[in-house]
Length: 136
Ligand SMILES: [Zn+2]
Image 1 (cartoon, protein in one colour):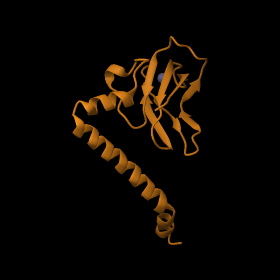
Image 2 (cartoon, helix red, strand yellow; image 1 turned 90 degrees about the horizontal axis):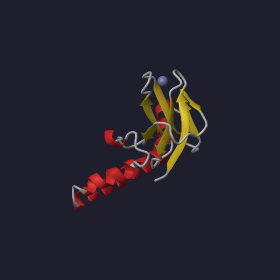
Image 3 (cartoon, helix red, strand yellow; image 1 turned 45 degrees about the horizontal axis):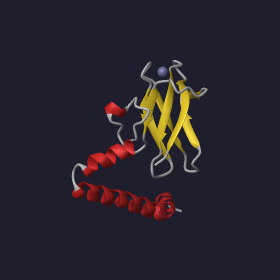
């Protein structure tokens, strides 16, 4: 549960902001968001080699006073936490799950394990599946 913090501006309109990208569990991972000034579609994340990727963003010097944009590739950002420099979507998600009691955390654990199992199984067969599909 890491947070990548850096400053960017929208390539289209120049609107500057401080991006707080909360790392997900799997690579590649990206988060798509809308420029609050011009409405253009922006993207930030990491490719399969864990190298950063972005679209329509221009890196600028770090400025702590810029408007904060929180992103997470797997979790919805609560509206109340969108501009909060101390907001952590993963902690917020776990807090909400714990409010559902022990069962909520059990369901979360099972769902997360299921996602990992699915990805591992897909990783193991995807090359063979592609060859089969392509008739090789
Ligand atoms: Zn813009």
